[in-house]
Amino acid sequence: MTIRGFDISSWDDDPTTVKKIDFALLASKTRFIIARAGFGGWLDRDFLISWAEMTRLDIVRGAYWYLTDQVAAVTAARLFVQSVQADFGDFPPIVDFEPINWKDNIPKIAFLKAFVEEIYKLVGLRCMIYSGFYVWQDFGSLDAYWKKYDLWVANYGEKMIVPPPWTTAILWQFTDRTPAGADLGVESLGIDENFFIGDEAAFLNYTGQPASPGPLPDHVVTVESVTEDGVKVESLMEVTTRIDNDAPVTTTLDQRPPPPPPPGENITAV
Image 1: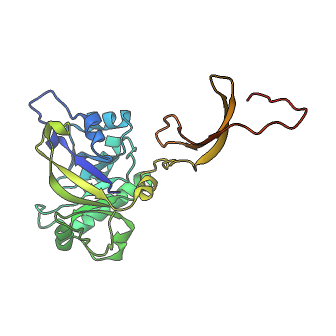
Image 2 (image 1 turned 120 degrees about the vertical axis):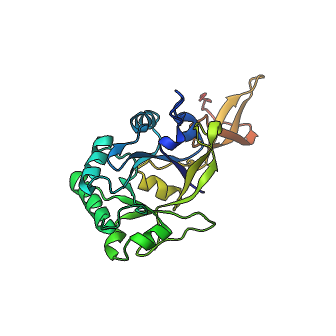
Image 3 (image 1 turned 90 degrees about the vertical axis):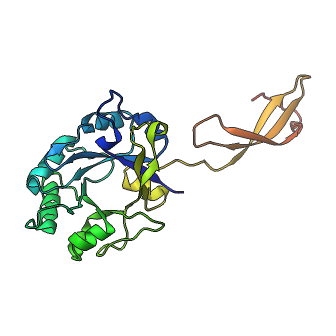
């Protein structure tokens, strides 16, 4: 089973219209949604409404902060925590690290380290790091220190490419051009889409969701009934409980008159 999710920001909502993202529709098309909480020293203009709506609809959700060099790393980390009121949803706090246009005199990897360590200091959670394969090659680090942070990697193609020191990722952003618009409840024409790297059990465990109950083992039970002409019969019924909690599915395997009772005993209806 392929587990997909979207990530969104105010870019997916046209500020010149009153319409907002239709999260009920968007969630019906995917398994999880990750929203941009802010960037630099500013809150994403749609985040508070989006976060409240995703919470209300019980969508598997996460939040990320787009890191810039416009404010100190510690300040940005504190703004992130304040924006979600220390509730990061179903994913770890996520930091988007793409320092392509930062000032040359900014020590970029040290800046990122200051951000993730401040988050840990404030809420005791390790960040997930979002970065492109080539971006991390150019601005990241090979230090094994970074392996303790989960990776969300972006590279657009037919296969996921993971930058060292990681050997795998939790999420893979494989496109920024999934056709969107009204069909997905957003106003952008294309939307970012991601794979969760793992099976259903791993996804449920990672996001803290209850495990799917799955169908119960089949049961064969004996059911007694009486026909219209008063003849009592026994039926062997195969009963399977559905995952969706609908009525049990029953299949008649055999139908026959019950054996006669021992001499001197009466038949008791069940």
